[in-house]
Every structure is written in C-alpha cells, then in structure tokens.
Image (cartoon, rainbow, N blue to C red; front, side, top):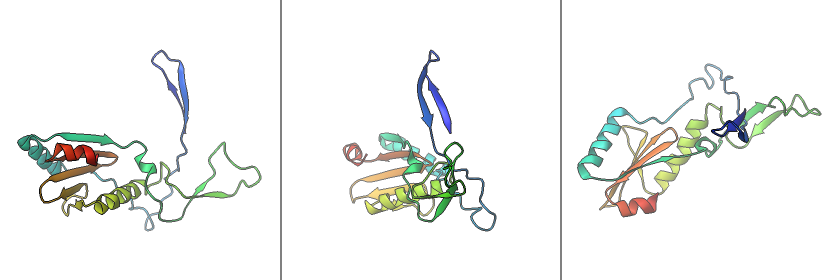
Length: 166
C-alpha cells in the first residue's frame, strides 16, 4: 500500500508504504473460521467501570501502535511477490513470511496470544468468562487489564504500582 501523508496546508509531509498481505485466500474447511479479535464484552466493561467509579481508581488507556506486527508467526505462511517488487529473475517465486504482516487473517490471534502469554508469565490470570479480561491480585492490590483489539484499558487499587507496571 502506498499513501501520501499531507500537512494541514496540503503540502507533502512524507510518503508511507506498508507491505500488506492480501488475506482473501482463506479456504472454507481449512482456515476459514480462524479469525479472532479480542473484544471486551459490554457487561465486563460496565462491571470494571463501576468498580473504578465506586473505588475512585484511575484508569489508563494504551493504544498499541503496530500491535499486529508484534505477534509471533507459528506456522508457515507464503505470499505472492507484491506488484512493483516482482523479482524479474524469479517472477514465479513466493515469499515465506517470518514476521506477521497486516492483512493476514491470523494476525489478531497471534498478537493476542503473544500478549496473553506475557501477561500470564508476569502473574496475571485470564478470566474464564471474558477472554479480554486479565486480573492480577498480589494479596493486597488488585489490577484489571482489558484488551480490545489493539487497545488496552488498565486500572487497579494502587496507583503507584500502576505506574511501575505500565
């Protein structure tokens, strides 16, 4: 994908390019229903917000830029050479991807798995009711982390510890 970023006055600020895998080749019965986006359930969001308000806690929101590029590719994925970058000596060859790219249907799941594994490794527990909710309880303090695609909401009982965790 090519895009020109412009300033308010219309002058060119910079040229952006992004390699995007065309993700429309999934086959029904093989990988057709493998998409996954971690979305917060409305009931979970209302419950956490009611706790935040009643306990007078601070809530933090993080937007993870390039989140989908930070997942780990756990299977072999191949991609056609993109238009404009076809190797004239090997025009029929394909790329084997080692990193995730935008456009792959498995990217949100890989990002969520990578984030989830990290959160579990530092002591959070995954909710059994809502896959987007993670809870950390250290015996004194409690923290809630909500994952909504590439946005994270974070709150807890100890503001000083919140700053250290973020």
